[in-house]
Length: 493
Image 1 (cartoon, rainbow, N blue to C red):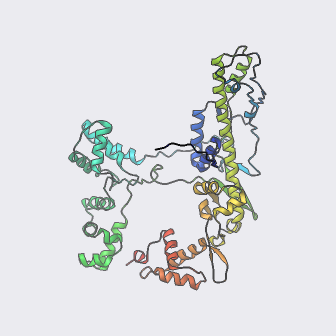
Image 2: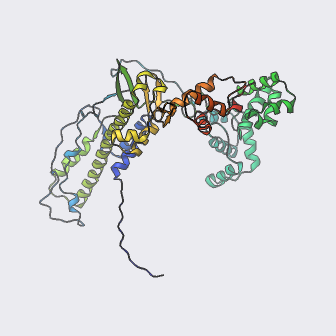
Image 3: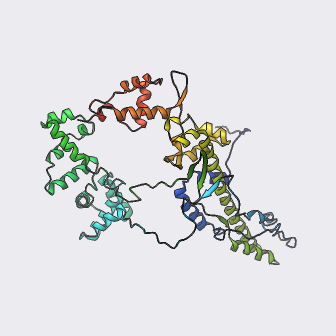
């Protein structure tokens, strides 16, 4: 194969480290920003939290230019000269745009009151606590811990037994048999809450019913339904179940009532923060002050950052030195790199705040009628491009903000994605938001007769009668987006 050279010209766009850092920070919601800042504080000693509320003046222009040092170190002397540290001094009184910051409605004054703390026990901790009550040999203990660690967030063991055996062999150098794993699974299935360590939803529900049967409850028919007709039950093919088991409508109603009381996700403990309830911390607050909308940014997890005084002192000490050898110059280069990193991070935090406020401000103005009334039908069609053009931001930047942020209003807390929707034209030629159509569709389904629910064709006709030009497949798509099942699954006896 002959080799040859060619000259090519390419136009490439590369992001700087600062831009990449900003893009990553934009995706971080307020609930996780505090942790991200803690990580940066741990990694960079030149960065610290400004607890004093002000920053000492520090201005050393060309502080480290050394005209007396003629030594050239590996051709890198320029790296150590003309280091201007004045740019690292931050004005703690800087404001973010023309908007206010607020600290999540918490009072600034400390009234001396002690807030009670609720003690939470995670699902994993609960399992290990019960495991400690069993008398197990060291190998059994290891197997049980491996099984508990393999449970998913629902408390279901979806991993194959062979995979657990392989994990024990490769990671812990312990050879076990399939029988040992199955025996331990049976013991863990006796733990609370009932239904844990099942291989799927069907077994999870059956474990709970069998636990009830052991305490004297009459759930025999319900167990038969789940054992023999689980698929038919989930798809609401009630006629097949009644015919197969010879049940009346009343018998099946009783079975359904017993099954719907079971917990399909035993791993989701009440109050378990890591597995259960998700607490939303809003990134923005919008208040209606006599018809004037006020936007504030939640600054609870964005502390005031500054350059470390200790690093400034080290640079002062370096400047006082007469002879600057190679080791000293390497040290000051390290300090400068840390200062650069700290400055970049501080700038990125402030740019993040500006970007968030600009984006939310544009959304607030675009959807002004909704924020004043709370009526979803007031939502205007709006896509990412509309906000990008209004803020002069890139569409990808707007998308990063909208995907992970929440705003608290007097009508509730909403994800920013909620305000984006495409347009749909009515018979009168008016453009309306697809959000409005979905709301009307949801209302129609909510008010329908559940013994004879509307088909997608019927729903389409009803929407068209209201003036919305919409196809049946579009109705089906909107229904699925609303997490509403088909008519057959909405039917009740």
